[in-house]
Structures are given as structure tokens and as C-alpha cells.
Length: 180
Image 1: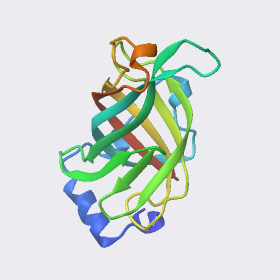
Image 2: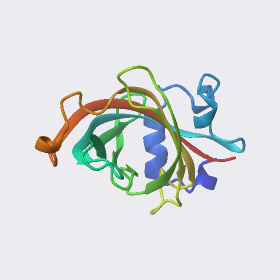
Image 3: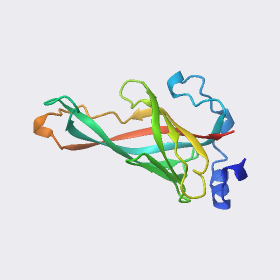
């Protein structure tokens, strides 16, 4: 499996550090909404926990003059193994997952599904070909699940606060898939 993903010795060491985490074969999509399930023909390559912040800006809604909303600007998070070791970071725009080995993957959002109240939605992203060789090489899809926090601020966003930025904390699991 590792050779097919193009993983380096450093990456193998990082994966070994995750040995105390649940095996990727134990992750199940069964409880997820269909919209964010990864298509057949893909398997879990990596599980990570993203912990960080999401930035929002008060902006006028597109095609709705005089109506304002908190618009998503981008994330800034650390990616940790299930055991808690830092393995990379997640930032944007564009949405980029970058391993400590320098490999990185960007992607295109395919679908979202509601999470629980007060938490950002679940998400399915199709990965673009990775840059660099390492942990992100061969990633086909990324799921965001088990979200905590991250929703737009509950404070007023109007013409008086146009351009104001707010940052909120969040956490989510990122499940990375590769072709079987």
C-alpha cells in the first residue's frame, strides 16, 4: 500500500507514530449522510484531527444589495494524528492540507451535509493531484466529519460592521482517501 501511495521513509515513520490510533480500516461511513460519502473504489489512507480557527468577514451578500452576512474567509488549523502528534496543517484559501513532509493537496468541495447545532457542516472534497511526495500523495477525497464549533459569529453583521473580521474556534476530523 505505501509504495502505491508514494510514501517516503519519513512518512512511514509518521504513520508508525499513529500506530496507537484506530486503524484506518475501522473507520466507517455508514452513519454519514449519503451526500458526503466517498464513492466506492476508495479506501481510508489517513485520519487526522484538525484543531484551529476559521475566519469570517462581514460582507454584503452577492446579488442582495443592502443585506449583509458573515462570509467564510478561510481556516487556519493544525492537523494531528489520532494519537495527538502534529502531522501537518490545514489553511486557505484555497483549502490546502499540507503534511510536515511538504506534500500538500487542495480540493474542490463536492457536497456538504448538516452537522449538529452550533457546528460547521460535514463536507466532502475531491482532491486535486498532490504537490510533493509524501503523506498527501494519492489523496482522492477528503471528508470533514465530527465537527465542533466553527460556525459564523452570532454578532450583528450590517452596514456599520462591513469589513469587520471575526475568528472562531473549531475542531473536525479529516478522513483522507486514496484509490484502491
